[in-house]
Image (tube, helix red, strand yellow):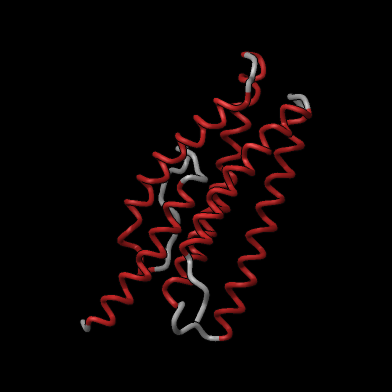
Length: 174
């Protein structure tokens, strides 16, 4: 393997690993398996699973510290939170696949592949909004609107950290 192809592989692997690390923070320990990734990065799946498990607990701890729930509210909130994060994990899996597909082809992407990835990006964003809307409705049935709003503020701030990490480390397409 030439120095260039080793460097290119390492650069793409770095992009993929950065994406996994950033997305890991957006997940919970409910993820039973690593997400589907581009086959060029399949050797990283065990590491992804480990990062997700660790980062998911960190996210839960941050939410717990900032929600200010009573015991009664907590018994209603945490099962919904777990279901919400599970649904978001499924969306996150799609995003990992999208980013690894990009990383695998970033230097030689066809017009058709670029169009496919763009379409998938918007589909993922739409699904993320649908999940949030679904859980706002579920949560407001058993919790106050202020409590639900507080949760989604916290959730959005944590998502912004993830998005900033991705923006800083995933290069523009060539």
